[in-house]
Image 1 (cartoon, one colour):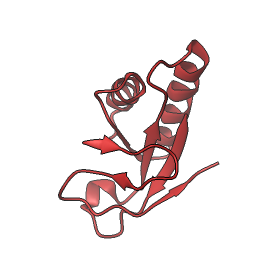
Image 2 (tube, rainbow, N blue to C red):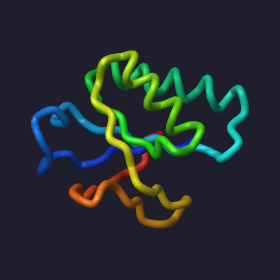
Image 3 (cartoon, rainbow, N blue to C red):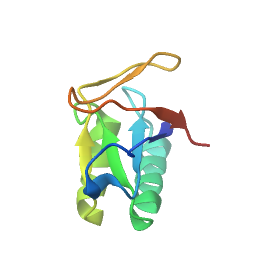
Length: 100
């Protein structure tokens, strides 16, 4: 699973606390699912909004975790594989950096 920060300086006030993107494998293991819930929960507690592709298993899990934590969720249309550009909603120009 990859986690990356998205520059929200030009976005609405609901995203000014920060936006974290989550990308995972198409067939996540139980460990990857646990890592997703723990990671999203940790960022949500700190006030970060969450972004993912809800059509993927990890994206759906991230969306449900964000909803449970009552933080904003941004649905990506498509997230490229490692090394490629990250594509977000058509109205959002996103600058990203991977978090470790």
